[in-house]
Image 1 (cartoon, rainbow, N blue to C red):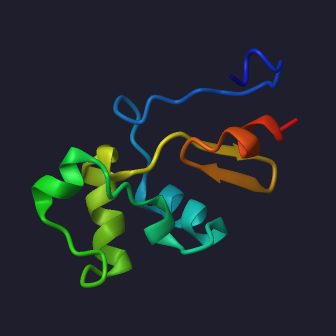
Image 2 (cartoon, rainbow, N blue to C red):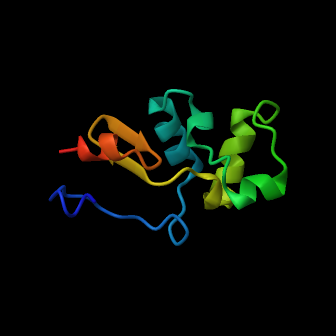
Amino acid sequence: MLSRRKVAFTARDLFKQPLSAAEIRALAARAPDGVRSLLSTRSTQYKALGLDRKKVSDTELVALMVKEPRLLRRPLVQAGDRLVIGFDRDALEALR
């Protein structure tokens, strides 16, 4: 979608080059609900771990996301000071 709209971007495969804890915390600082905004509760890994997002601390979530990138909502698109978490067509199309 970004390529079609001629938006310049750098892709990163989170499974080959996982985000560090510091990178996740930096993204979370810009997210509306912090670390929990980045959590993919629909992922099979989330379900397999039996996580209760109300009982897991932010520190624990960050550590889990570092170990298991499938816990991160994707795509994560950072453009300047804006962050789009998950597939939000309108928000992605607004990036220029």
